[in-house]
Length: 212
Length: 266
Image (cartoon, rainbow over all chains, first blue to last red; front, side, top):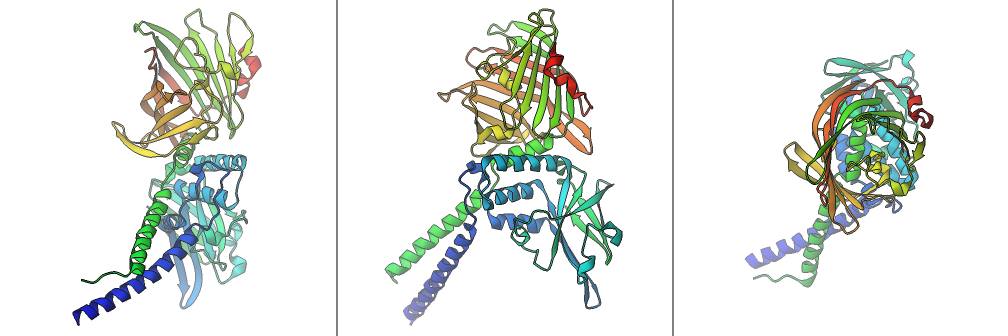
């Protein structure tokens, strides 16, 4: 009797194991899907997408506002620290199969940008699509960043680079959202280690995002 | 006792193999030397300019010392170009000697030396860059730019030191240099190099540079950076060493780029 229970249990265990094996294979093939760029130094190796998305989730703050049952807006803001921006650079280098010169140029641009600015990715959804344009200041979109008691005004930019699906870089961003880049004149290495409070004003109300 | 079927043993083996593969994927995802040097360059970029007065102390193998005074001016011309100008102020026999470097991000740097005795700027070509500079253990190539595009990087590791945690990695120059490889130690606290070990073609360590006495500077626009005030470079074969000691340093000043032209050397 005891032996038959054991046998049943072990059969079930190995059936579960075989399913786990298939899932593992799917997971591994998904992880290794981006092509390896052999033109570049091994230090340009594609980062793990699961680790990248973990970093994105850790640096993303989301605010949803409702008017009764009516959704006024759903806006997520992601702080693009140096770690995330370097990972994005490597993802793009591998997806787009950059040559050495292009990779070096893009890295030089990234260094220049990080040395000057602190950058956030803003993913917005509003039912009123015509007002979902953060580059139009006159309709009430504004942002400020507070660090160590000093407030810095922000500047919105449309997401110019259409080569990469934003959904690949930010898994919370859906085709119903619009993506923007928000920049502040404060170097990233100086800002990223300090607590930050980002205030966003919109035609639908304001929202506060805290990053520690 | 229950015996396992061969297929079950294969499943177990494959599972162990898979777990190992996952572990490798996670390991591969950690930071690389490229990430660190990119962060270090971003931290130290946008200093605008740097004007320094220094003392260069030269020691021979018998520890006899000679002192020289220098003025060094650096200027960030653009994202891809930096200027360095080294001028000797004393003693009399070297006063007026100047070394001008245009450090390019991607192409080979341009260098000229002006000797007051000859009164004509002389271009330093590739093969002469490994020569010692004005009798010191510094070479002309030590005064060229160390843009990250000019190196290939090895694996990254961490080490403890008196100044806290360090990142350690090897880098090999893409162009021909006097050294075959450098081992670089970066302070996580100062976000700056604190030691470089130089290795020759046979893999032997023959020279070492140490960076000490870091001071913090505010440049403006909320930017802060550390700079070393004492660099000791030692030849481990001849036992000769040279020490650069900063007596004054200013960062972030606006400068006229004309002072870095070849014609201004005269």
